[in-house]
Length: 265
Image 1 (cartoon, rainbow, N blue to C red):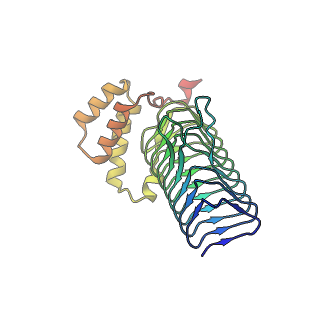
Image 2: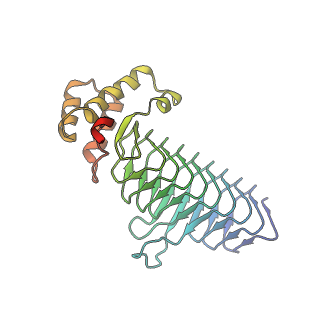
Image 3: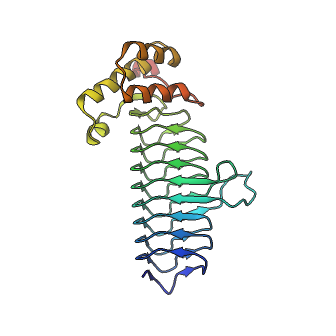
């Protein structure tokens, strides 16, 4: 049985799982389905189309399933899907999808910090950290284990690969390949060595990723030629292939290569 504050509003057609805690002044719309053991603190808003798994904690002021901030939206029935065990902090806003894809998807075990915004039709993987004030425009794709630093803004349709880390205050206008750190001036800033080590990557795997990135981002070759060179010269591995396939399939183009400080001035 769920514990629902008498000062909360829950639409009669909303589906609430067992063991949920819904605090005062929460608003849960029709066409909302949430699983078991979710905790909604006070003043949380779940609008029509919200789908939520189990074990999530939603902090005050968060709004999930908001109408997309997209002039093409014509009121179509769409969803915003949240996985399991996410922590969504104060005043986060998550828009539901549009006719483009029909849904906004957020995986499991994510931490989305205060005042972040997830736009319509975004896809976020699992185990990500979206830091305070981050804004994701529509149809951004974020992989697993990604960290996006505070107050960064990500351009629509941008793709961010697994295990990438983006420095705070960044303006992200190009795709960010997996395993790397992106500087706030939209340049490659090395591999995410600390993050990879924490997630169990071996020294050999990390060095193999470094070798690929050295050719991709620290040579004078364009990305397509660098991919060919890396494929020809470096041993096959899942990490190598994921990096090369990501770069080759990028529609927006990837982040700028490494540039020494003296060359930026």
